[in-house]
Length: 409
Image 1 (cartoon, rainbow, N blue to C red):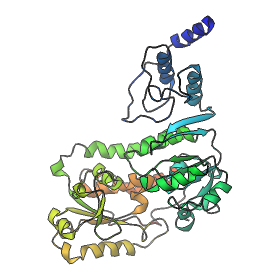
Image 2 (cartoon, rainbow, N blue to C red):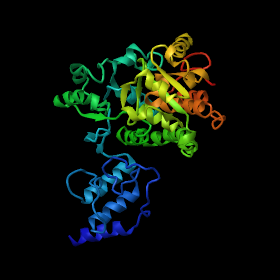
Image 3 (cartoon, one colour):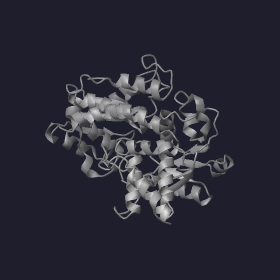
Image 4 (cartoon, one colour):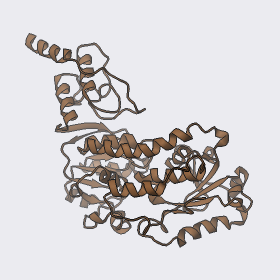
């Protein structure tokens, strides 16, 4: 026992770097993150030893082995996580569920499109995803060419459980939104391991990507991708955060449905705010249908129309987006609204405003909301670099694809 104490004290005294606060404002939800910052490194090893010797209070994530106590096994686990050699990993997903997975993961099923796109940004090998959401096969052939021979496992709300079981996955990735809780429960009821991440809200995306890097053994790739992603998003937020509320243009955002919009607590609202806009109907609810009279009363200066089916990588004709814009501008009830009067009505594709690609959409929004402030911002160039560097696609945006209309004011 004395010998063990000497060894442990020696390990403790070979001091690791001083514990520092995280640069980002989130806590990486992986067990072993003892000092509760945004990464697992040697500072966590120092911290867990301080806990073991009674010098620090135990933190929620300090129990790296997730066995109910702090002991030398946690020291070993943290070291293994740092070098990417751990045999299992316990994490907190975006639905606040604690999940333990065996490592390495070799067989994954994706019930979300956003997981596939994000995993591809992290250079996950295609053959490790053994089943995909049916939309990948029926609607996204151009964007996901390498997955066209993969098994169809249904959708996030209606998974094909028998098919998924037949694929013998190590884990199933699903959305974290409460909309999908019933489906997740059904998957777990038959013994499937499920991890829930949304990968579509910029408020949580960085944390989710960091965590995914640990899960799939692509931490270095996650860091590389996030350097690019944050380079875009942070450069926009650095400028927009200083804009006073009174100088933010009033925005009316409309989904594909007539007068269907969004408010606080939604990812769309977050994107509008990040781009420097004032979501003028944000106080009326989360997702709701608004009376046109209320839109007239609020008098938005800019209108953003969301589009799904007449846009994207497989569409080369702007006619659909032009028609969507004309329909909105020709509504008699909106003819005196400032946005219509000043031709500040824009249509944007789901492809670049939803999901992992939303940072591209945010760049377009920022350009529309504050053209003078973002005269150096080139959303199309950002989009092209994303496709080439992180999605591995040989896709020329000058030749193909329809994503916004008009591109600039």
